[in-house]
Length: 430
Image (cartoon, rainbow, N blue to C red; front, top):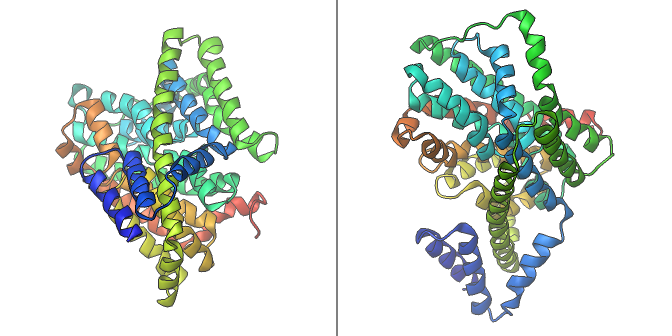
């Protein structure tokens, strides 16, 4: 009865349009009352969950880095570097979109930040003069932004590491090769589309000018390497590295490039607080919801059922892929990560699946879900930012979805491709 009330209240609140965090919180309150438990447990679960994890402090810091880089105009230097590298290819600006998102993702850790930063800037450049259809420009930005959470510092990977109790460093390294493959696959897809539809190339940059462009972009380009270096050398924890990254971003914005005002800094802080509060509300609801689910012994029941089917590790991973994509139609990625994934982690461990590999597959699924109609958040973000009708973006996104699914399938079936770098770094046993 308690579980039925929990799920019924959650679905009712979600259908009525309540924020997911409040929906989970309401369901948790209803569960406590129905099972005659102290409703003070809601506060207990929320406070313990939010304030007992030092790792969670990294999340607002990485969000702040992305907001500072956005507000200070550092993205322009990254775009110039991307244009010099790949602008001469078929569909030049669309190729730049992928490369600039790949670079910026090493500073943001968030797909939405990538879409609102380099994705928006390049999309606007693409539609000038009618060079590209607006729907294609926005779809390219949405697809390119999915690379972000695969590259360190990835906010979803930090959450997963907390849930599955695995090394954040191993997760960060595990996402690098899939991120590179995703970028390469999207660029190949753009190449094919551009040649078929006659999209333009950009004017080739003289080879003599490239060193200067690279030097102007070197300092922001160095940030991901600095973060990874201090984490893997043991100089700093991921949380301390996030604080160093935030300080580095401020030095670039105020001292090196002098491109940020105090008013812009206040705006960046405001956006960071808003985003962090939204994530905190989601996590608070998830902690309460997950307490109720665990109290009803649901994870063990699901695990016992699946194990009784004698499902192989590969079969389980493929089933998780299908489940994640179906859930992406009705739930956002944070809800999936905080509510559904904790149910699946013990099952993956019992089947002998490496939890780092499983985590990368989960994050890949969530990124595909962000660009998957009809619920894909990135599609609506780009529609709102550019004013492009959502139907026009829906028409252009299928080739990119197919490309991402191919990469997802490859990473699902080839765990060594994900685990190779963490093993080389000594973070996992060979």
